[in-house]
Amino acid sequence: MGSPLLLTSAEPAEVLVARLEQAWREQRLVGLCAEQEQDLLGAALAGSVLSGAGVVVGSGGSAGGRRWCLQPLAHLEASACATGQWLQSIGLDPSATLQLNPLPLHHVSGLLPLVRSRVWGTSWRRLPPELMRRPEDLAAAFPLPADRPALLSLVPIQLERLLAAAEGCAWLRGCAVVWVGGAALSSELAARARAAEIPLSPCYGASETAAMVAALPPERFLEGHGGCGRALADVELRLDPGGALLVRTKRLSPGCLEAGQLQPLERQEGWWCSGDGARFGPAGLEILGRLDGAISSGGETVFPEQVEARLMGWARAEELPLEQLLLLPCRDPLWGERLVALVRHGGASGSPAPGPEASTATTAALIAHCQRLAQRLPPSQRPQHWLACPDLAPNVLGKWERGRWSRWLLQSCDGGAGADDAAAEVR
Image 1 (tube, rainbow, N blue to C red):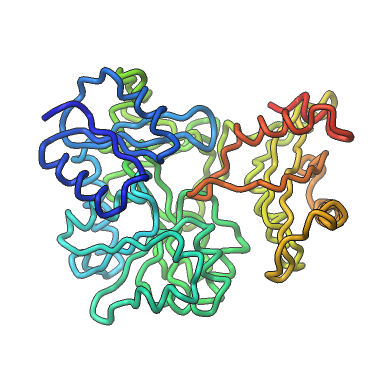
Image 2 (cartoon, rainbow, N blue to C red):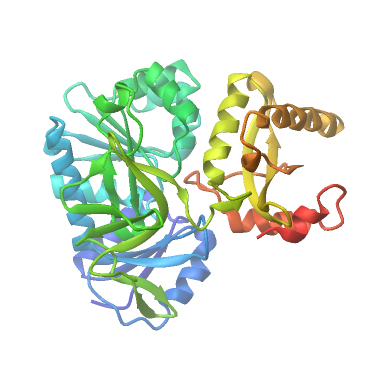
């Protein structure tokens, strides 16, 4: 045993895996992070006397501050066992599968395929993220085996890229299960996946729960059911009076690290509050959005993620060149709160984005189209301001770092015409 080991995405994947495995054999704790977050994780681990095989990974990057979540290896292995039971329930033998993983190892969703392969005694293959952007090359570089069901973990942005090409669709259809999580799956993207007969399994989990706690079987997805399915065998789910999802499982994280000290995870009678608004539908869990991101507008509760998904779906149905859309809250003296829309222009029908000389005019036209679409929404959901944001993009897992873009809004709109009130009042 020794002090915690810090590993970053700067290391080649095979080196990272080898060092991680060696540390676990030595019963050492390992901190995993993106290269850009090395200083943050280093500060969280500094002075820690924690030991034992496990990991410290990031959590809470989409809302609130960054947290560094501790998960013992035993919890990760328990998660793998529960996922194996879920596979058995849909007729698959975990020990006969192949794990495919294009997600980064410093995220719990990218780490679990490795852990599952260890627990199930199967092989796994890492898919280079850059190859996931070239679906026409993916099948040739990674043909699916005929003798083993392939299991794939994706985030929605990766799914969207693969569905955009016939080669990507054909490759996805060859998988036995395609888990998709980490960010909201829009109804438009789900419809495209059903139309392409992709065996999709929308799922829900968090770093604090050692990844997946609920998953919808592909058969039910293809039948038209929505949501994230029912709880895995070692998990209990319920809602608190405010509609927040509560989770109880023995693999809940012991806590988060701050300056070397473990801050226990808050829980009541074993129940942890996820911070996500949810409901239970006919097929199980349905996630509504982050409660800390929900707003009250004109007496109505509005989840910005749901509004984003609807607007993006309508824009794509009309083939508008809307590459990205993010809605942020601002205070309003009459409504309480309203939404501000950040927009990134993309090329129509796969063409490149406009050059500088045409950018202003084309983006203005795009925003006018989006404003027209927004008239289909209830008044409480219609963005009050629309602003061009050329660099707008989610993080590597397809999650929006809303605090970052709120700061961008404050800085870029300081003194800007037409958006002063929005910038001054952004939460």
